Amino acid sequence: MRFLNTPVTDLTYNDVFLVPSSSRITSRFDVDLSTSDPTGSTTPLVAANMTAVTGKRMVEAMARRGGLGVLPQDIPADVAARETAWVKSRSPQFESVRTMKPTETVHDALAKMRRHSHASVVVTGDDGRFLGLVLEIDCREVDRFTQLHVVMRPEVPVFTVEELNGLQLHGQESDGRNSHGASADGNDAAGAASGPAALRESMAHVSARMERARVHVAPVVDGERVVGVISRQGAVRSTIYVPNVDANGALKVGAAVGINGDVAGKTQQLIDAGVDVLVVDTAHGHQRKMFEALSTVRKVAPNHPIVVGNVVTADGVRDLVDAGADVIKVGVGPGAMCTTRMMTAVGRPQFSAVLECAAAAAELGAHVWADGGVKYPRDVALALAAGASQVMVGSWFAGTWEGPGELNQDANGRYYKESFGMASTRAVLNRTQGQEAFERARKAIFEEGISSSKMYLDPRRPGVEDLIDHITAGVRSSMTYAGATNTRQFADRAVVGVQNTSGYEEGRARGESWA
Ligand SMILES: NC(=O)C1=CN([C@@H]2O[C@H](COP(=O)(O)OP(=O)(O)OC[C@H]3O[C@@H](n4cnc5c(N)ncnc54)[C@H](OP(=O)(O)O)[C@@H]3O)[C@@H](O)[C@H]2O)C=CC1
Ligand SMILES: Nc1nc2c(ncn2[C@@H]2O[C@H](COP(=O)(O)O)[C@@H](O)[C@H]2O)c(=O)[nH]1
Ligand SMILES: [K+]
Image (cartoon, rainbow, N blue to C red; front, side, top):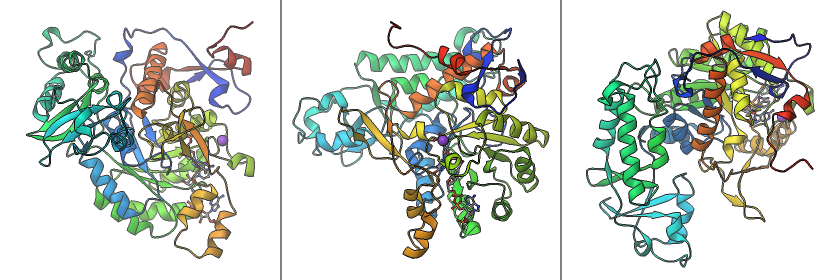
């Protein structure tokens, strides 16, 4: 990356913009978003290790679309193990669904369907056989205690696991490097016999069958048993994203460990459970306890990718890479739940922090994740331009169907979920539950995060996959403006300018006229 004009201060995402460069890329689908770090992600997005952000459903959805979700350090190891096993049992191809019995009520179905963006449940018999599909719309204007056999749709297309896996395999039999459906030179594979173009064609058929039946989602069965659903949007997504899977083909899981307590024991439990990526996490990553924790984690998990943080200086990066980290998490104070800068004045504007740290990491063959402060797709594009291998998103993802928080409605009927900081009093009291009241009170003094905030679900993008679509669409486009087909090229070719607040304001859309 090079600057258009030399900056004189450290910069936030809002302070900078990207200038277009000459490009030979003819389609935004010709961009490969795969990361160069050892996590295997094909989409450079990570759901943050925050209690209000990442639970099993978030991990599942992130990995299915090529990213990663990191379970927070506050989840007990046995619970993290159960959640990992659950994620590993999910299909990389199709989506999970709640199955219900025909005598259960519309009231219960509505609560369950709102955990998934496809907003549906499947009614099954005692043997797991498909009996009917229930969509949200089927539950309107009926009594809440109506039983599901009354409202369910028994006649909808049903897909088999073999058929969907077959289509996916067929789609991979190609020499095209890109996952999105165009061959490397931008032309579709001739004849579409196999490869991405064939996958696109098959998924279009899958989607058309649902369209004809006037449903947006359909059950998937393994033999007779319902094992999930495929949505029309899911069919489209399966031609754009490549799932982030382990050597057994199961979805990848990240999990965090703190720097206190039984670091070795917790790490061992996590890797025994099948966790793929370990994140050693504390507010001040450039400190002695972190080095001790990192060395312990490295001994227990010599071959796992280890991410550590947080830091904002090149010195911090070098010391942690020397100590055995593969990826350094960068960001002190940019987070939406974070009060560290106001409490301590410590931190650094995030764009400059990422830029300096990424350069230091690259010299050592390591990588950085840009962590915190992402509010728009542009922020992700800028973090990648600054050299981050991935971008961690917290609060924005908390307000989605997949976020672990409870779904609430405000006085105007808008849906929201609560988010809170991991250094807030709320989180600290959670974390220290087993300790004496006196000790807990001492720990709660160092509050550096807010305990409650409303994260509204965007009515146009209520699911995290909708946000992934939104973000990657922006980033793909951004990369073609820079003439880059992959993330390394992007960091290389990006030209960044510095703007004032009116420059930033000019870029915003107006929902109303000026006068
Ligand atoms: N990215 C960011 O800007 C920030 C992120 N967070 C997040 O909050 C969560 C909790 O982190 P954390 O508060 O570190 O708690 P941890 O439970 O990880 O404990 C931190 C340990 O480091 C010691 N310590 C020494 N100096 C500091 C310092 N300046 N800040 C914090 N701890 C210090 C603490 O001791 P003692 O308590 O005795 O001082 C404690 O033993 C993590 O998930 C972290 O990522 C928190 C703040 C900033
Ligand atoms: N200073 C604090 N930082 C926090 C706290 N909880 C989380 N975080 C950091 O924020 C990012 C996520 O940022 P977001 O803007 O996407 O929400 C997360 O990964 C942590 O590094 C906190 O209590 N205090
Ligand atoms: K902040």
